[in-house]
Image 1 (spheres, rainbow, N blue to C red):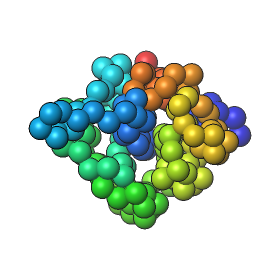
Image 2 (image 1 turned 120 degrees about the horizontal axis):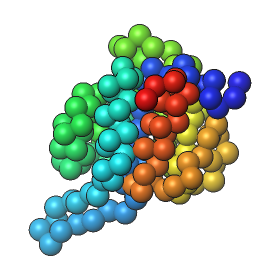
Image 3 (image 1 turned 45 degrees about the vertical axis):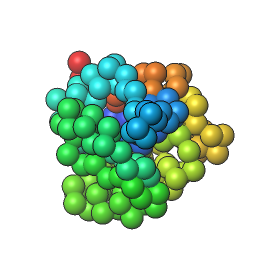
Image 4 (image 1 turned 180 degrees about the vertical axis):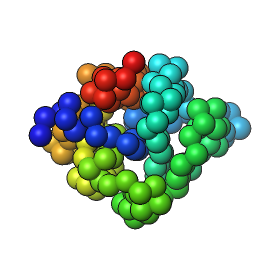
Length: 164
């Protein structure tokens, strides 16, 4: 099955955060507060997917107030943070939403994302992903995480589904 066929059947997209929605660097302020930088193009793409009826979820191994705030801004209700064992969360989410793994796209960059990419109908690694993730992926983005990779994924899926 080719990439466009895989993308055409997607009903759920799961994103990692660090290295996917951000460039992977961790910023700490003088008071120890964590700062994250998100690209506005990624957010716009995610909103477009939601408008098209595609459900979005975040599964991140790190827990971050900045991520909680950004996902609230984007209206993403399926947010899971602070657990690097992502596969059980993935399986519970599919069951809760009534979608299959084949109808799910997963976007990742590092080893905790590998089990999800191995199960997903559309496995995507960002350009800055570790080699083993790139090997497991059906597609590798042309840009790095945090620099528009999520938007590229969103546009790919919307195009495959014939949506504006």
